[in-house]
Image (cartoon, rainbow, N blue to C red):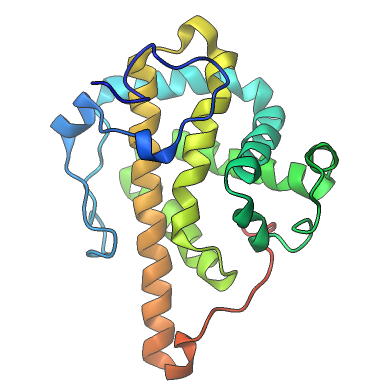
Length: 222
């Protein structure tokens, strides 16, 4: 398909720009993405994965599970390299500019593990679509409280995919790639709906809530 996530044109370990993401063939057949600010009830975005894609994700996750601590750290180091503004959300280490020092940071390691735990829970719920959607929706709601803008959510999936390619080696195929991409797009959409629902609810109950949400760390909220 000519995009960065559609074939063997990716060199292991390279960061994939978010502008290069493209829809998978299987995902296009399964569903169409909803608007970013669209309906926020159950099923607002159709579940995009077919059974074969679920199996690919589950099989690759079993391989990755033993490396989740390392993956979590690498994902966020790469995230801060490509989008340094993301560090502003994390007050515990947003002033640390030395990436080597960040790699040793206990708080960053803990947060990376929490994000990996969220992915693990998501993989475990691939056959329970309502529970999967609610998991991501509630995570998006909590992120509003900590001023973690929705534009950042998709970056994590992009960096995760770039990080796990060299770990999976020959098991990383275009089909596995497409399955993970589709899952992260779905989770991101659900998180965004949760974020905007929380913002609308605050605005409805308190007009002053339209001001910028209070800043803080999301380290303990995953």
